[in-house]
Length: 169
Image 1 (spheres, rainbow, N blue to C red):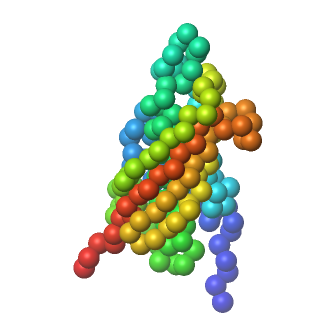
Image 2: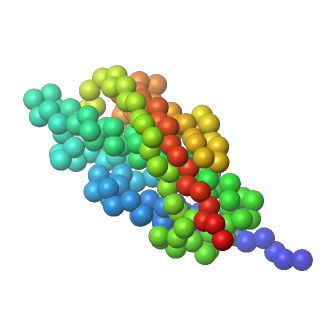
Image 3: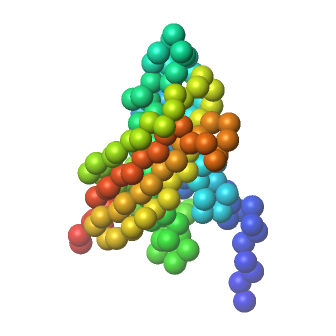
């Protein structure tokens, strides 16, 4: 009988898959967005940077940076949800995943609607996406972004995405 792998090895492989997924989008690195993973749950983090300020008189985060942050959180959540299902079912071996692999293809945005609830302050921001519908071709996601208090979001978004199709043989 084969012994189960140590938990640390499994976590490292999952983190490597998430890193490869995020690394495939240069704009994520430009904004400085990173992701914390607890099990299958992701939290997107947008560290404060002066380049993200749109209105220096307030100061407030630029609306485009906020919208991009929400869209990134949604897309990575969808990609991660698909990869998580494949890893858990055994269809994907995390040890074989390399940046740029076909299995890391991300969904394409159909539309994103952003609700700006209040000004984003000059500090770190966090976002969590929740998948409302996840089909073979289409997905719908809701994202909430907050700064100091998760119960007081400063922006929310709803997005619709086309899911990548598996390559045909």
